[in-house]
Image (cartoon, rainbow over all chains, first blue to last red; front, side, top):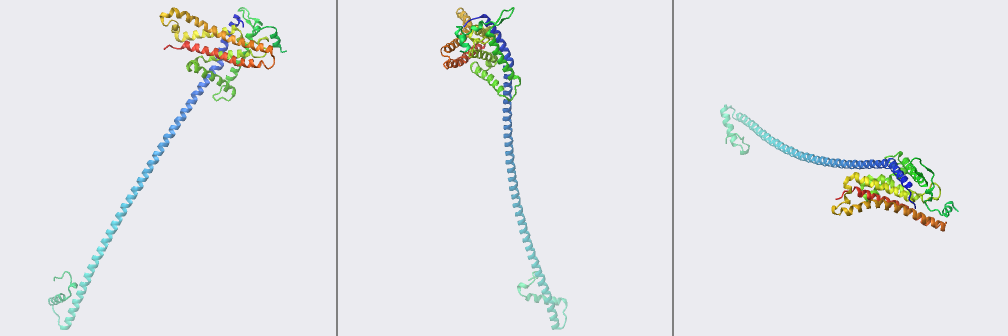
Length: 168
Length: 244
């Protein structure tokens, strides 16, 4: 172990040169590379996180829309059901009203037809009666006498076959 | 008998080869010895490795070589960051890392066969001049960095509180100069001592037994390089630290 100034001076020179060259050829390039890589990794992680969030958001949006569409469809169906129900009731009502009207009309027609037929029958009967009577009495009565005879006859008819408009 | 044992028997201690002067640089009068050639060899190997490794750095490392260099630099940074904080570690990394590599390989060069006895190969750190030179670089760097970062406030700890300044100032100045002295002496004593032990065991029992001190020297060489760099890191961090 010895101390020599020569070695001291040399080691200072050598180390300073070594340090400067190593800084230039090793530390600076490698450190800047590591920094760049670190920045890149951070950037990628950030981008991945952003993409994940975006996917999450669009998934939520999609689900929201799906739920909306489902509700909408449900509404449509129930509205259609309600409206169909209403229409059905309306049609049924109308049909039953019409049917009733038709029955009513038919009843009226039948009644009036019956009336007419009865009148006709009465007329026939009256004429026949007149004819028979004239045949019997062999003389013709004037119209006024006929009418009086008919009316007498009608009055003798049973109550229920009497025409409605005939005064009692 | 191996030639280095012959040389050892010749009674020359380690570091004797430092006296083999290959040539003297004219005008400045600096002598080139085995210690210088060993330092140059170490520098050349490390710089060539660094240059080859960083010629084509790729964003995604494709070679183990690049991965190794990245691991080394990143490992240094992480390690120093744990002692002096990330910001300081980044700022002083090239200095501390270079110091560590330089000292470590200098220590290990003494474990090569024939170190100290074949011309051109002597562990630089077994010479006090070399460790004193490294400690001087550390001393100057610490003062420079401290003054550059903090200006006159760098000297504040020597005169604070003011009424103790007459006592503190000489102590502070002495401390600043004791540090590099201790740094250099600790390193050279350990390496020189280790080499002497290895040599002694080698002379006594040439076979098998020297493996034990040799393995210990591998450990101590790393520990001494570590301690030197570690203390330097702390001196630098203290020099730039703002008092609270």
